[in-house]
Length: 344
Ligand code: KG4
Ligand code: ZN
Image (cartoon, rainbow, N blue to C red; front, side, top):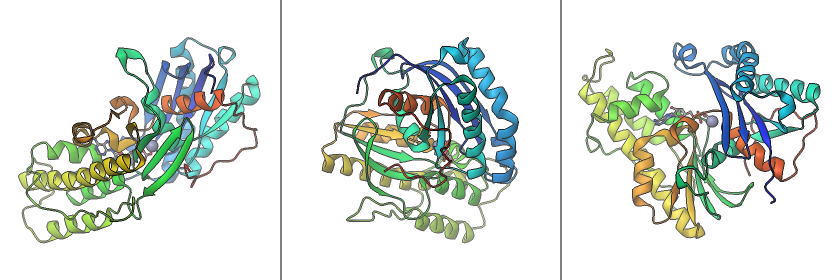
């Protein structure tokens, strides 16, 4: 693929963040704006779809406007508009998509529909070359762990994916969110579990590991049930908002079990596929224990996005959009959102 000079506006609205960013030549970030709805959804203990789409409607104009202003650019200075087409919440995706279509029609800029999961994978290319950070090398084995997805994909080249396996039930992030609720730790669960686990003993309970031998699939519903049983069988897991040592131990033991399975299966899959590098992506890639364990254990280079690009953002959509732009993709204004779109 010939790499071109291009400035891409990225737009993301698949879940509970409204985001826009301008990226130059696939890696130089000129602006990155994220309006999060976390505080609004925390009240419900999870993302409330109707509330999310209404918030996107309120935020999309100011967020895109701010991204252009921060970059000191107008639409005429750009080369394409990349927008998340799926997967995600239908009512939320539509808001970003309509914004992108409107801008494309008004400016004549090409529209490029992006798979949100591909965006997560491309977050490791943002700022490539800075601080001597090299680009990930193909073939690479990607572990994608977010609130809605958990899968292992082999990436043989840019934009080329082969799915090895994925979760049969809960996504890893979903397991973090549900267990956090069981432990009274609030929403979003991932950062809350990580914080509690810092003061806990990860050997306190040996939670079961679902290895799913003979496949590259995952399952996290068993461990969630085990945490529930542990909580129900004790009097000392109280949800009083105070620092509770038992809650910390259970959080640490849960996180340890999840990290153990994710890291071991990823490294095994990398060996089997003779991958040259491993790429960690998605909201759960912000987890410090997961990042550190993978880096310590892997015999090949591990790429993890900077913390600010782990959870949903539009810089990653613009990064994927850049490579699709270079590959010649131009979508028509009649493309529709794809709420259950698979990566491969
Ligand atoms: O990628 P993302 O922002 O949204 C989706 O595409 O789903 O991922 C959100 C998920 C949530 O489940 C959240 O609990 C989890 O990522 N997460 C974490 C951490 N930060 C966010 N999980 C574990 N440890 C973290 N530090
Ligand atoms: Zn995401």
